[in-house]
Image (cartoon, rainbow over the protein chains, first blue to last red):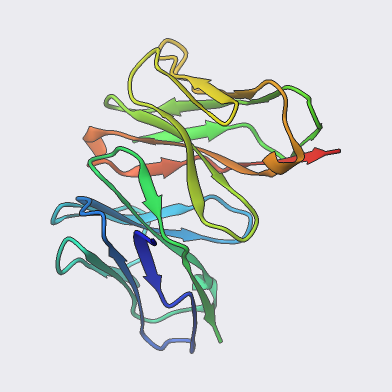
Length: 111
Length: 113
């Protein structure tokens, strides 16, 4: 059974049109992460939550926002997607820094 | 800040060859260290981990030892198989960064028959 679920698997959005990606988990892990992975590159950490504490990476553009309304759900909001934001977005969870479990990712296309 | 440096790829080996992928880290706290693997078109999977100095992580014939004195966590396998072809990422997380999990750039491995 999938433990970290990302929806949708594929998302096409228009240039400049806000888009939201979602992630849910059944593991009751306290840490949730959002990564951006471009082709043939390493996952780049955008931000993460440790419980309710939000941690934004210094180089994450303001265009990217996140919400975590409860333990199980986390959202990535891209306010005005540009062509350079086309990528795979990965959600992951961990229990206080122990093994991280990744979702299958959402591939975002910007047209 | 925390960072991970791993050897550049791609690495091409013949089946049954010995594999080493180097990884060194910089951390302010007491990190846990990980190797993740990503097969083509799939997500990341944990391969092995070590949570304190001198720990050895092992899985599926792969091993890595947490060396605090050299700040390293090199991945090794004695005899690679074609099915090991994938991208390997070294990663760390620690308490000082609120358990941010940061990855190295990845090393692509291709094993040929």
